[in-house]
Amino acid sequence: MVTLKGVNIFLRALEPEDLDFVYEIENDENIWELSHTQTPYSRFLIKQYLEEAHKDIYEAKQLRLVISDYEYNAIGMIDLFDFDFTNKRAGVGVLIKDTNNRGKGIGSESLQLIIKYAFSHLQLHQLYCNIVEDNEFSLKLFNKQGFEVIGHKKDWNYINGHYKNEYLLQLINTHVL
Image 1 (tube, helix red, strand yellow):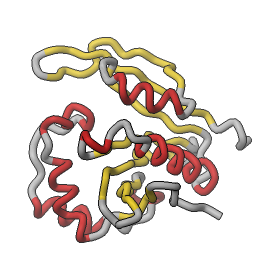
Image 2: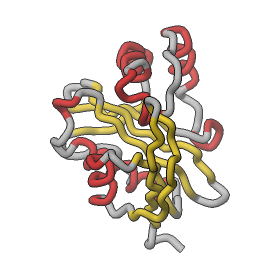
Image 3: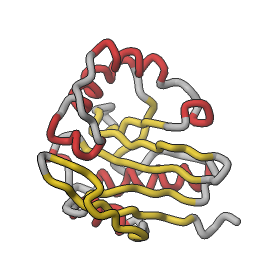
């Protein structure tokens, strides 16, 4: 049985009530570097996005879930993106919104749940992520879950007038043939 419930958090589908939460995340310039966002999003566009969030991962090629505590408070989001069923792989990204919730194991627990879901339910062979070289916190998080650095892209992202290197990390599901 697939479960998206952990000890301290669970992963849930986006709801219309998440409009303000998603709006704040998508318009937080401090994290645009992580998502490669260049411009703000309107409430109208985010509302439209939420209305389409019910689409199946096979149709939308992505799955965005809210990381929630058991009091139903939204803490962050976790995404599977660039879903490629033919090659059985997807990208993964995780974001804990408030800095005071970081470093508490929420990201680790969320990542464990999405890995289990991706490998057991979606039967993926691999997950990957791209992390800017100076994001030591994310590198540690993904390494802790078994992701390995398989590539180093030099001058990959132009951010605030400077180029930054980026790592490509990969996790291969060794239990599926």
